[in-house]
Image 1: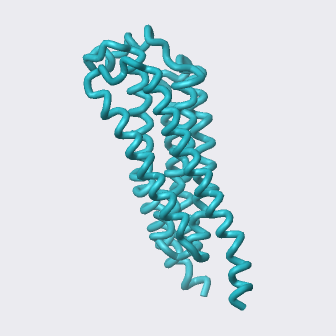
Image 2 (image 1 turned 90 degrees about the horizontal axis):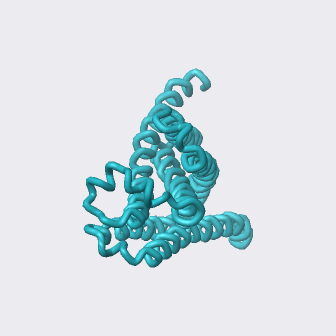
Image 3 (image 1 turned 90 degrees about the vertical axis):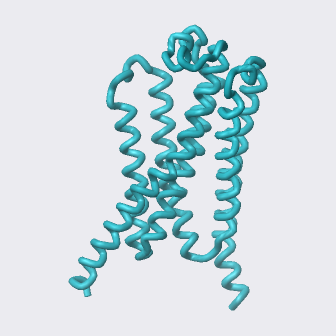
Length: 239
């Protein structure tokens, strides 16, 4: 019997290990791109406060790596359900954000000042809420809903930051002449526009990594509470 249970658990263990490997690969890719672009910008660290723009995303990515390893070591049907849902909804919202990154960088003049970026943002947040609602209702646990929302956001942001870094650092880095027209650059006191562009992208990556789980926590709690409330209201009738 024990051997049968171990055999039944092995596919889930493999999936957890594979998911952890993929997510850690995203962490490594993001760290690698950040390191590469800073190394290729000799003037970067001569700018005021440049070190903070590197340390913030690096610390955030290392925190993500620790969380991934910790979560991957969890076992049981409860955690399997959470990770399965987080993988689906995190991958879905990550794909949506890749499209958003492509639109922002491919046709920036068409969407400047428009509601398109805000629309993508709200769609992503709503999907995290849906993930929380479904999970909280199926597992009858607000905690499970919160975990799914936050994990989905984490997966989404690892994908989103990687896409943003690839575009901004490798495929289509912003023109220094264009960066020099930014009000933020003029106020910064920096003298190297290219280095400021790198710092701006690193700061954006850190913001996404740090803020997304908090937003997911809010949307996840509201959705999970709603799921528990509706479940309580419905269950006596169903009984």
